[in-house]
Image 1 (spheres, rainbow, N blue to C red):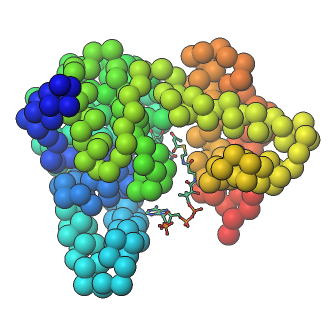
Image 2: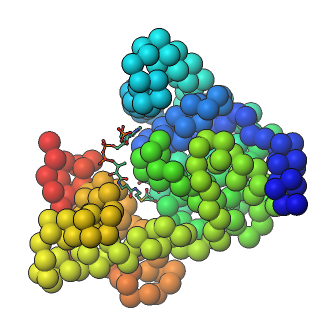
Image 3: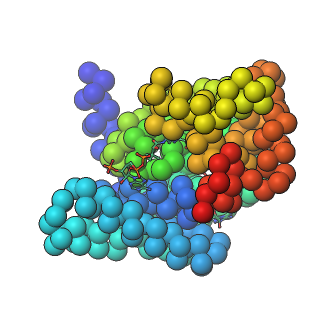
Length: 300
Ligand code: CAA
Ligand code: NAD
């Protein structure tokens, strides 16, 4: 049946070595989850200091995971951390990351910068290499518009924090082959994620639904219907969400939030995604959330 076809065809294409381009928040998490399950990973970033930062954060997150896996067994924790960490190489030279089975792009959320990168990767990588973008809100088809291997290209959308969130959205562009799609699904499973499939629609599944939720929470606060603290408590205790909408907006970043709403508004014209004056004001003031020290709440 389907299961048998799935495993036999995908084992031929099993992804064993990967590169992650962009070693920021998401890229370092993606590199970590792959290294944790025995895959060799190369992280490419334009700035050496960001590669150093990525390595530090991966080391401390691996220790967190190791402690959870092996409780008080310090020897096992140490070897898990060391072995996983040693599978990760870093470089500022894209060519060092080209000869792999899969490249996951996690650089800045800008269409032209992503297009340039994929055009370069298309030239540098061997024919079998699958190229994937972790974009939150840009169209997969548009990102891959200039590449030749359109059948070996798609979206692999992770969630923050990558080592903890169990979901991976596998996004099918218009030209992806069934073989590539299956290899991407199987790779997602191999790094411990539950994969869902979506078409190349604005916001895919999760952000398309989080957008109206987050926007309406902010409008509710703007109207003075309830305090932001009470709205957060409401959604945590009344709906079982781990964070309330304002905590989540600060966690994700208000600039990211604004950009995602903007893209979904442009593409769908649905007024639920229309610009929100309060977000525009806060972003203009540099109140971006946890990363800038202040958003809806203050952080030290
Ligand atoms: N690496 C490894 N482990 C981590 C971690 C990290 N970076 N961050 C947290 N953890 C682990 C902790 O060790 C802890 O493990 P145990 O419970 O087993 O001890 C667990 O995760 C919970 O962490 P904390 O106790 O520190 O804090 P918490 O209970 O508040 O959980 C949270 C933190 C997991 C972030 C949780 O609040 C949560 O799930 N929030 C919602 C996050 C969310 O919705 N993310 C999606 C955003 S949308 C997106 O990403 C898409 C996009 O395109 C923008
Ligand atoms: P980030 O700013 O933390 O990291 C981006 C990294 O890419 C930086 O280290 C930067 O130096 C590097 N970079 C920029 N241009 C580059 C280039 N041309 N070549 C190599 N490296 C380059 O950003 P992030 O939050 O990790 O987001 C990365 C991607 O993941 C974006 O497309 C974003 O939309 C998506 N995403 C973000 C989240 C989130 O919650 N932050 C969730 C899912 C998806």
